[in-house]
Amino acid sequence: MPSIEIDFDVFKEITRLRETEHMTPNDVLRDLFKLKPKQNRNISDVLVGKSWVVKEVSFPHGTEFSATYKGQEFKAIVDDGALLLKGKRFYSPSSAAVSITGNSVNGWVFWKCKLPGKQSWDIIEKYRNQ
Image (cartoon, rainbow, N blue to C red):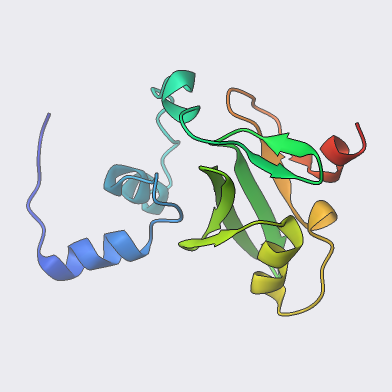
């Protein structure tokens, strides 16, 4: 595997740009260069950890969440029993949404998710109504 040397300021910036703690420096650079994410992770690598259970709906560890607010996309991930957004853990979709908007928001219609191993994104309210 090739390696590159970077100075500490570059390392700090790459670390700051990580959207989740599961995002590697390589993932950050692929995103900056607008390259497609590598799909070489095994589903078993993602499914280690507790699911996030909200209102009797269970989102498996590793479930990706996404929302767009005022033209900006926000990404979060289910991490060991909570929704991890910008390094902070949330226990309801609405509290995570409020942290973005600053207003009262129904998180069940604000967020969409992609379950581990799936290709499609769904509004999370779909799972609440099943």
